[in-house]
Amino acid sequence: GQQVMQIPQYQHVQEGEDFTTYCNSSTTLSNIQWYKQRPGGHPVFLIQLVKSGEVKKQKRLTFQFGEAKKNSSLHITATQTTDVGTYFCAEEYGNKLVFGAGTILRVKS
Amino acid sequence: NAGVTQTPKFQVLKTGQSMTLQCAQDMNHEYMSWYRQDPGMGLRLIHYSVGAGITDQGEVPNGYNVSRSTTEDFPLRLLSAAPSQTSVYFCASTRGRVGPQETQYFGPGTRLLVL
Image (tube, rainbow over all chains, first blue to last red; front, top):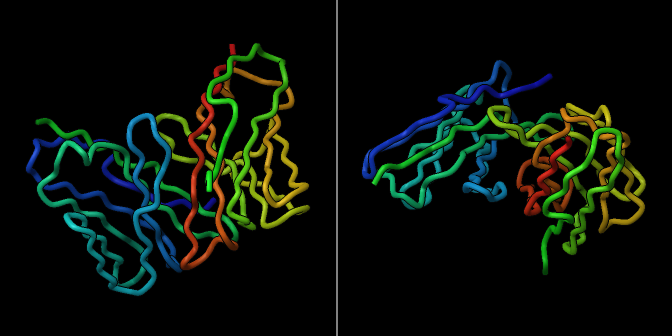
């Protein structure tokens, strides 16, 4: 079935370092959503990207949608311990929202 | 609004037992869905519903049944529990059908262990 590939699976960074996770699809996406799940918690919506080449920022988080709408990235500048968790991208597929496998972020203080 | 609520929070079952995971939302959302989350596999869609009386299968529907008799409730039934169904189950809802400008709101999850 339809699936977005998300990399890396896991990243451990020093506090203050930057972090990026990527999602790639073999097909053109109509839109892509990003979610964050804190350890022991539930996924929480962060943002949705719809337009080709779109860039959106939320404080230290920058989200990009590729020009061909086949890939997306989430970049965190100067990570903090509050950024720990799993970051998921999700694509719309028919009436379904299909999630990537997620990137687990750990931050060393 | 309570948002999306799930009960129970934790459950231990023996192989072959049946049970129902409850999910309710008070936001008058049309779309509801069930996911299971396993390590390294992200969230996989089990079943979803675009409105009362309408349900459909997701990626991993085998061993699960759903019904949607009201807009608010979307229970997930395990017919005969198997150890492979040990997982964390999340219910989610969306105001309208999945699409641009529609985001999913997740419940707190149910942790299920099948022995």
